[in-house]
Amino acid sequence: MRKVLEEGGAGQVLFVDGGGSLRTALLGGNLARLAWEKGWAGVVVHGAVRDVEELKEVPIGVLALAATPKRSAKEGKGEVDVRLKVLGAQVLPGWFLVADEDGLLLLPEPPSGGQSGG
Image (cartoon, rainbow, N blue to C red; front, side, top):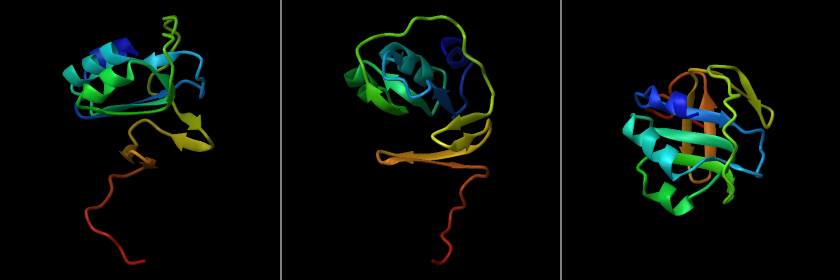
Protein backbone atom coordinates (compact mmCIF):
# COMPACT_ATOMS: atom_id res chain seq x y z
CA MET A 1 0.00 0.00 0.00
CA ARG A 2 2.88 2.36 0.75
CA LYS A 3 4.18 2.02 -2.81
CA VAL A 4 0.80 3.01 -4.28
CA LEU A 5 0.38 5.93 -1.88
CA GLU A 6 3.89 7.20 -2.69
CA GLU A 7 2.96 7.47 -6.38
CA GLY A 8 0.49 10.25 -5.61
CA GLY A 9 -3.27 10.33 -5.68
CA ALA A 10 -4.29 13.49 -7.54
CA GLY A 11 -7.52 13.66 -5.51
CA GLN A 12 -8.36 9.96 -5.82
CA VAL A 13 -9.51 7.53 -3.14
CA LEU A 14 -7.60 4.30 -2.55
CA PHE A 15 -9.88 1.31 -1.88
CA VAL A 16 -8.08 -1.44 0.05
CA ASP A 17 -9.68 -4.88 0.29
CA GLY A 18 -8.49 -6.51 3.48
CA GLY A 19 -11.09 -9.23 3.16
CA GLY A 20 -13.00 -7.75 6.09
CA SER A 21 -10.35 -8.99 8.52
CA LEU A 22 -10.13 -7.18 11.84
CA ARG A 23 -7.02 -9.08 13.04
CA THR A 24 -4.49 -6.48 11.93
CA ALA A 25 -4.60 -2.86 10.77
CA LEU A 26 -3.89 -2.06 7.14
CA LEU A 27 -3.65 1.72 7.63
CA GLY A 28 -2.29 3.85 10.44
CA GLY A 29 -1.28 7.42 11.11
CA ASN A 30 1.98 7.35 9.15
CA LEU A 31 0.43 5.98 5.96
CA ALA A 32 -2.53 8.38 6.26
CA ARG A 33 -0.13 11.33 6.51
CA LEU A 34 1.76 10.02 3.48
CA ALA A 35 -1.53 9.77 1.57
CA TRP A 36 -2.39 13.37 2.41
CA GLU A 37 1.10 14.62 1.47
CA LYS A 38 0.87 12.83 -1.89
CA GLY A 39 -2.55 14.27 -2.77
CA TRP A 40 -4.94 11.42 -2.00
CA ALA A 41 -8.51 12.45 -1.07
CA GLY A 42 -9.07 9.38 1.09
CA VAL A 43 -8.61 5.71 1.84
CA VAL A 44 -11.34 3.09 2.28
CA VAL A 45 -10.26 -0.07 4.07
CA HIS A 46 -12.40 -3.19 3.98
CA GLY A 47 -10.70 -4.23 7.18
CA ALA A 48 -9.15 -2.50 10.18
CA VAL A 49 -7.09 0.63 10.83
CA ARG A 50 -5.02 1.77 13.80
CA ASP A 51 -3.89 5.09 15.33
CA VAL A 52 -7.47 6.40 15.27
CA GLU A 53 -6.63 9.67 17.03
CA GLU A 54 -3.89 10.38 14.47
CA LEU A 55 -6.24 9.50 11.60
CA LYS A 56 -8.73 12.12 12.85
CA GLU A 57 -6.05 14.81 12.49
CA VAL A 58 -5.08 13.98 8.91
CA PRO A 59 -7.22 16.01 6.46
CA ILE A 60 -8.28 13.12 4.21
CA GLY A 61 -11.29 10.84 4.39
CA VAL A 62 -10.73 7.46 6.03
CA LEU A 63 -13.40 4.76 6.26
CA ALA A 64 -12.83 1.30 7.74
CA LEU A 65 -14.77 -1.48 9.41
CA ALA A 66 -13.04 -1.15 12.79
CA ALA A 67 -9.84 -0.29 14.62
CA THR A 68 -7.25 -2.59 16.13
CA PRO A 69 -3.88 -1.82 17.71
CA LYS A 70 -2.06 -4.63 15.91
CA ARG A 71 -0.08 -3.63 12.82
CA SER A 72 0.01 -5.91 9.80
CA ALA A 73 2.95 -7.85 8.48
CA LYS A 74 4.28 -6.13 5.39
CA GLU A 75 4.38 -8.99 2.93
CA GLY A 76 4.00 -7.01 -0.33
CA LYS A 77 1.31 -9.34 -1.65
CA GLY A 78 -1.22 -6.72 -2.75
CA GLU A 79 -2.52 -6.16 -6.27
CA VAL A 80 -3.26 -2.80 -7.89
CA ASP A 81 -6.03 -1.73 -10.31
CA VAL A 82 -8.03 -4.92 -10.01
CA ARG A 83 -11.75 -5.59 -9.88
CA LEU A 84 -12.94 -6.25 -6.33
CA LYS A 85 -16.07 -7.78 -4.91
CA VAL A 86 -16.69 -6.44 -1.41
CA LEU A 87 -19.81 -7.41 0.54
CA GLY A 88 -21.47 -8.43 -2.71
CA ALA A 89 -20.72 -5.12 -4.47
CA GLN A 90 -18.36 -4.66 -7.41
CA VAL A 91 -15.56 -2.13 -6.96
CA LEU A 92 -13.94 -1.25 -10.27
CA PRO A 93 -10.84 0.88 -10.89
CA GLY A 94 -11.87 4.36 -11.97
CA TRP A 95 -15.31 4.30 -10.35
CA PHE A 96 -16.39 7.26 -8.25
CA LEU A 97 -16.93 7.11 -4.53
CA VAL A 98 -19.24 9.32 -2.48
CA ALA A 99 -18.93 8.87 1.28
CA ASP A 100 -19.81 10.30 4.66
CA GLU A 101 -19.72 9.04 8.25
CA ASP A 102 -22.62 6.67 7.56
CA GLY A 103 -21.22 4.80 4.58
CA LEU A 104 -20.35 5.04 0.92
CA LEU A 105 -21.73 4.76 -2.59
CA LEU A 106 -19.79 3.50 -5.59
CA LEU A 107 -20.78 4.99 -8.94
CA PRO A 108 -19.58 4.15 -12.46
CA GLU A 109 -19.88 7.84 -13.44
CA PRO A 110 -19.44 11.07 -11.51
CA PRO A 111 -22.56 12.15 -9.64
CA SER A 112 -24.52 14.96 -11.26
CA GLY A 113 -24.81 18.28 -9.47
CA GLY A 114 -28.61 18.30 -9.53
CA GLN A 115 -31.28 16.04 -8.16
CA SER A 116 -33.90 14.27 -10.20
CA GLY A 117 -37.42 13.91 -8.94
CA GLY A 118 -38.50 11.17 -6.66
